[in-house]
Length: 247
Image 1 (spheres, helix red, strand yellow):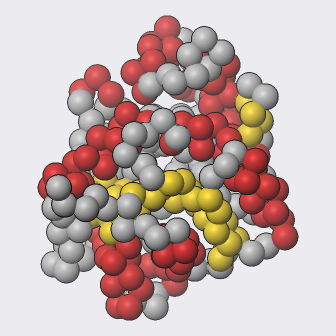
Image 2 (cartoon, rainbow, N blue to C red):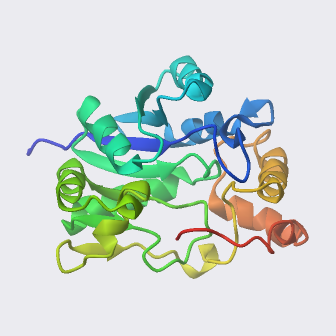
């Protein structure tokens, strides 16, 4: 059997968010948001390691402490050059394949992450994501590519925009890299639903979803989230007015 690539999830996380500072350590059901996200990624079968990619800022010392407490890796790099931070984190932890996630997705569904990993391995493409054409709600965002591809990107561009958004150069250059989108089935599709943590309104929605689901079933899925929202449609209105940033 051929050697299996070493697959590492990176979580970009820092305390200095502009719209909701300290958001990754806000607590729901007694646990920091980032702790929930780590716990959910720990349920992804194909991951060999999880690495929290944070910054060298002293304000991110608590982020590193949380990673250490939960027994996952961490890497500290540039606040602004996120591409280099992720690339160096991957290299430091001997990753062949990077599963790129961000710390504002605490509701991420482990099953969907696994689907993306398997889709990437089967397709043989340079880049696979479930966001190229958005079908899943925001907050399920998963991107998969090799460390070698990201190193190639770093060698091609010095544009601050490319370095801030890590993989934007890849999917903006389909003439260089082969791309594949992983769409969601109809029952899990709602691209206008915001399950990502950017604002206080987002936090209120996420808090209420965790309180509804986590105590009885810590391994709840996106399907379970949709069931709660079907029963309590007013919840989705909490952050429906929020204007989202990039992607």
